Amino acid sequence: MQFDILHDTHVVIFAKAVGIRSDYGLSEQDDCMADRIGILTGGGDAPGLNAVIRAVVKTALNVYGAQVIGIYDGFDGLYETGRTIELTRAEVRGILPRGGTILGTANRGNPFARRVIRDGEEVVVDVSDEVLEKIDALQLDTLIVVGGDGTLRISYELYLKGCPIVGVPKTIDNDIGGTDVTFGFDTAVSTATDAIDKLHTTAESHHRVMVLELMGRDAGFIALHAGIAGGADVILIPEVPFDFEKVCRKIDQRAASGRHFSIIAVAEGAFPAGGAQVYSRSGDEISAARLGGISQDVGEFVAETCAMETRVTVLGHLQRGGQPTAFDRWLATRFGAAAVRMAMEGKHGCMASLQGQQVRDIPLEEALAEPKRVDVEGDAVLTARGLGISLGDE
Image (cartoon, rainbow, N blue to C red; front, side, top):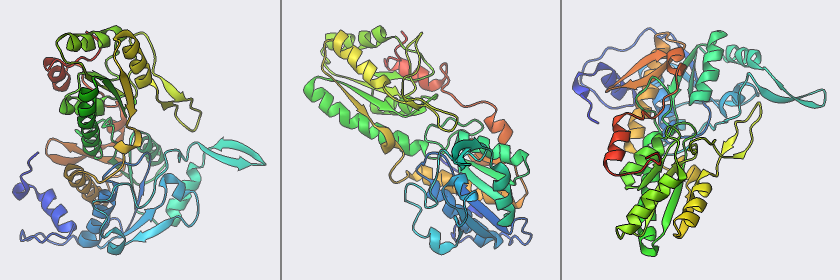
């Protein structure tokens, strides 16, 4: 992706904010609408979170002279005392290439449904008012929330109650509406593609079918992109219910033509036509049900029906870890810098988004109105079919 930085004022400001010298003669920002900015990271971790934190801190300090308060472990840090830290240049030095988040995160920290002990019993209560009181006590003019669909929905509910929220979209699943791509996705696809590359060599050597389960609860972007990039023979995604027999048909066709191995990339949320998603753990009012097991079902059916030795690999949280790619660092940094500009402009209730080559702000309500899913008639799916990759439906 190429960016015309010579004619993009926001990119120039962003470069200045992160400490890159510029001769464009930009004036200093004298009017500061947000003297104290809070930032937290919620939901599952993703490569690039630290790049956002770094960009927020450096932009706030370099351009606006504003103070940044980091909040530990997502919204939990706004409920519990002593869970904040002032972020200076020292705290963010050297974190750009690091995975994870220096602030920690929590994917069950919903202030509207928090499990607490009351009168000796465990109950689920709404502590959102206490969270708002903590934000007031911290004297935060803006709270930047970096998270996925669930975290941003909580943020929007807090915004409706008067919290000065600015959102930054984060998810390896790439399933948030309103933005072309989320940071973390590129790194996850690279990790998944590398896994497929490695499985190819052992699959071919042993004449096996290798089934790789990838993350993707309701959106199959990782499996689809990595499957195409890694040369998978079958890709199964939630948006296209599959037929076990048609998966086997593809494997049998390859074997009949002398290719006695196959690679199947399966999103964890994929399911057979007329069936349902497979879960390894049920959910409750706090925790979502945990997907897992569809790859085993596929592997067992293929081994029995196609009479081929089959192995199953679940990539799991490897997709969340490790150093972010250059693209994810670039995008996360732009999002972080844009979030500070939005805070200074009082654009609360909005989210940074990538649209084409520009980072823009859109209302959280618009971003959350409809989750993003793989377009089954779109270019990526058509490309896969044109390459002869089976999606298990034809």
